[in-house]
Image (cartoon, rainbow, N blue to C red; front, side, top):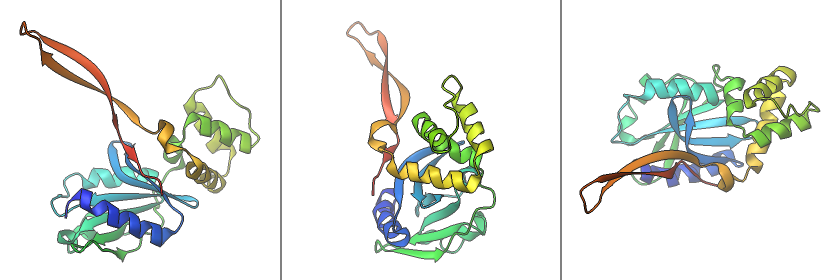
Length: 212
């Protein structure tokens, strides 16, 4: 089963398992591209897909990056990985298997990731959402300050448990279709009749969002 075939069964499973969840796909986190990030009440969950044709080559780096951002982490696997995936992920990661029949099965539940950092999670927030967090917590607007300054100030002034709950509430409310597309500069060349190659710049968008 390929990655693209695993996603619909996974989304159906997540909706039934978590109830309230909002998911978005192909999100850059640190040095990796997360297959799926899910926002649930008071927590961020990450789902790394390993289809039957995938290897574990990049999983060590991916695990490290998911651990920075996600309270709960899952390996979502095809059936060929059932015997060995646990050897390649921490014991607090969960495992979900997508069977060849298209059914999803929870093999192991995830538990709280001990390595997650609020200073990474807050990077998921847009500036307008950071401004809302300042307002909610009766903090100054810091209009002339950088985004990083505002992130650090919120972490300093607001209890982390309260802050992650506020952040996930805002992420539930976010209209992902407006801005959460990441512009990537792509360059292509074409030949003219004179044989000269012309360099063209265009903007494509990496990342797509699924709303539940």
